[in-house]
Length: 71
Image (cartoon, rainbow, N blue to C red; front, top):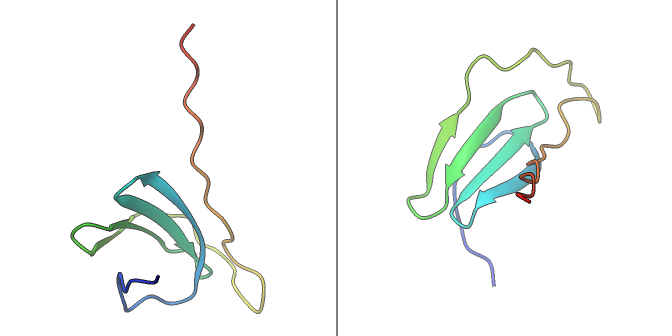
């Protein structure tokens, strides 16, 4: 089953869930966005580094660190 979430994106490249309702993603051109999956709202992060993009080159993936274990 698929669901339309948001439009107006360039070339989304990588994504990771921050929570069940929030998704962070990168675009090849260097833009990084956050999508609220409940409200279908997009927020672009500001002050991201410049990225060279051409062909397969560009900002690739995003990753969310695993929180440290409390002992």
